[in-house]
Image 1: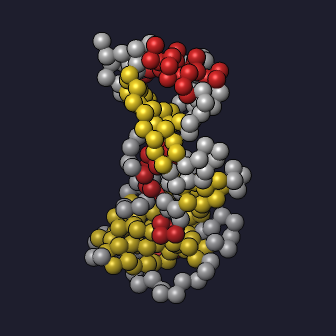
Image 2: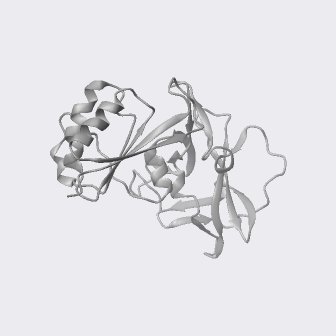
Image 3: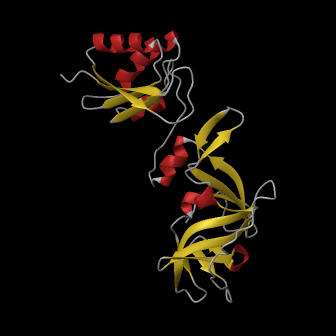
Length: 254
């Protein structure tokens, strides 16, 4: 049911909110009780514990204490005597429904001093208790939300691994802000032809770095086709402003 790091021995395990969201919940007798639509956490503690489960059934949101929920590899099930009730209209300020108030919202990364988007949330389950321990703002969190399985690996542009080259060619290569230094141009231009084939595409998001022109000119001299589009964004702006250039590149077609 969930991405996990434990066997069925009661040890702590990690799981993602995306693996719970939309999952069916069974009643005490196995009858359908709804689908997971939210979790409510208590924000008073440093690692907020989940206090209640919110399900959607017949268009209505219903809530039950997390202590009345059993979670196993087969799914979520309400314990005997559990009662689904309508959520309180007046919610305490220290109670946070994470799907409603946090997921897909922009938050401040205090270390990087920038706005980031919450793509997923990471929980730790210990002896039936569930605690929020991490907010995922990365690309992998977004991919996981989409239900896609995209493998990743660490790549040194100047010394690509045999593992990477062994997986090539790829249909699509996406890169973001890789042209921030002139010394990146040569290794990128040498690597990209080794990663793609005819019919493949490379998309480079470029916040108008000055060295992008040298990169594009070098690929053009190698016979690559280029189409560039300016895209405005609403995220935190740096010295480049609110426009990012998308360079769509294709290797020589013949």
